[in-house]
Image 1: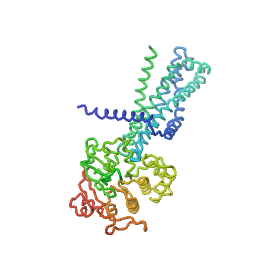
Image 2: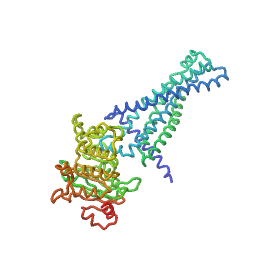
Image 3: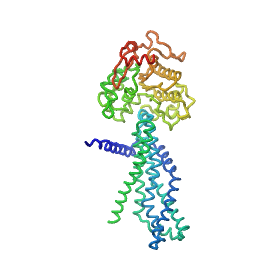
Image 4: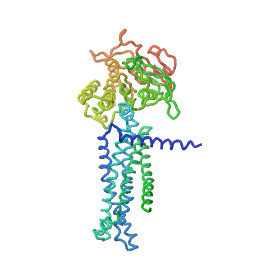
Length: 254
Length: 274
């Protein structure tokens, strides 16, 4: 009767097995440090232009939108505060992670999926390498390192975008904008702003690897795996951000 | 080989391999003495590739036992399997070369990663060049697989499979999709490897002609060509044919029995290609 539940439960089990093996491998030899740096370059440096662009415009849009709402209370001067808190706590981590999910979960899934359907994963095992150690763990470590860094960059660029709007559209004093930005940020904001991308990084890399490694059915299967990886990673980012936010909000209230 | 007093390179005992409860191999039993050749034939989806992957430990049998050089690999952990795989070379169906690596790195891969075959950098370089010279591709070291033709990629695959001098080599449809001339070159390389290094060889093929060449020809180093076997040389008894239909082993025997078989499925394989 409950047969329809079998497949999702098996999938979740497989995902946990993969995640467990990838995490365990962090402490086991051999370490493929070259692969970690290559992935950091691809995921981190590769995502930089798009993260900078979206960071700038999301900060700018935030300033424009918030200024209108704040004007009703005569608080346009506090635009910097709203921009900073929203960006650092939520928009910076989530937007950056969604971009990297779209760019790299798909990239990882299609690369590993192609390797799976052309038997390169089997060849790797036949030739003495654990594919999780060689392919999954380096991608996981690389994403965990670069995603918080990308988020920090996106946050700063976003604040700069807000500054441009504040100064040239809202005619605020630049120093006033930056002062409200710095004053409004607390340790709690920064902590969750950095913890979130760290947590999301595992969703992005492991979901991409998971769908890539279970690809079947030729090139069509690779396309399917890519789509599934992006959708699942994006959904997971929204679910995880809710839980992390909930924990931090509860903590702040107690 | 000290750990293999029986002299059996590969042994399947009532092996069943299932995917989602559907058997891809069903109750398959056979053994291959060291130095022998086996030609595996059968329609697409009859379980030949699954058999090779089971012999390598890439697939775990759902039932039965698989032994490689006297070691039972059926329940081995992946770590232990790496040791066993060091003794087996495999040419995958579409070569399965690593796209992101040069030809040199591809061929060097087992020498750098298989613990039992690790050697010094100078030795690696020498053996890679030797293996590529064996397949007459020593000028392609710095190229990537995508820069080579299908036949050349298959030859690099052969080089990677034999670079460690494994005593057992598995070839999965080495000539599929190749023109007859290139196919002939690949088969010549396989026979050359078998006769020069005295390896145990398993070959999956759809072409009866390939099986015929392996059963009745040997490599002649002086002329660098294949020549017909004469009496006593590489006796045909060392080469057997294994026929598969829907995961079951339906035929095991030499070429005369194969050609005399009245089973329409087997006859189709012989006639279709004959």
